Structure formats: C-alpha cells, structure tokens
Image 1 (tube, helix red, strand yellow):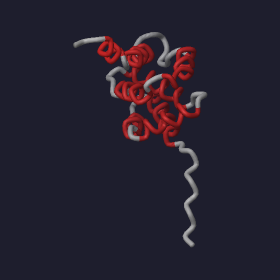
Image 2: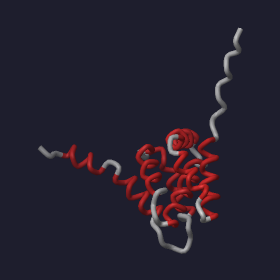
Image 3: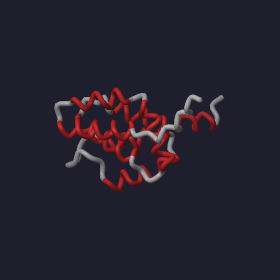
Length: 137
C-alpha cells in the first residue's frame, strides 16, 4: 500500500535537512556561511518548515566541530535579523525554549563562539513590546 503519499511524506523535511547540512558543514576558509547563502535562506524562510529548521539547527549547536557550531550561530543570527518580520517572530518564538542551549555556548573557551552565542541570545530575548498591563481600578 505504498503510493505517492508515502513518497511525499519521506521527502518532507529533506530540503531543510539538506539546507542545514550544507550551511553548517565544517570546512572552507571561513567560519561563517557565505553571505549570499544566508540571504537566500532568509528570503525563502517563509516557505520552509521553520520548527523543523530550528530543531535541525539547534541539534548542530551540540556538534563537536567548532566550525559547525559557529556556522549554525551565523545562520540563526541571519534568520533573527531577516527581512520578513513574521519569520523573525516565529524564529524567536521557536528559539525561546532553546535559549539555555544558546546561552551555554556563551561560556565557550572560543571567543568568537561565545560572542556570537551572546548576540544570538540577545536577539532571541528581544521581544515585541509586551501588552500594557491593565491598571487595577
């Protein structure tokens, strides 16, 4: 009973997985993904499965390879500063529960990693102005 539906289901999320793999792969001269790739990701983020994307990225923050963790933080930073406000809000919302993971990297012995983790943490904590509390009357 395997029909086209099964094929579609197995392909779901594969794009996000491939994207995360390519953006955070160790290697190359720089510890950041190319700006064009980050920009392209931000432009198509609305069409992606954001909860899955964030879950995959956060699993990369626990990678043993320093360069993968750095690149992952660059990707998260780009998404948090992206042009689409609805995507930015959703990424912030999805990242809030994962702040302890990001914050744990702020004490990393590698200064670039610690600094970038602190920056990403601040971006996640930036909230829309909370609604004013009704004054007790």
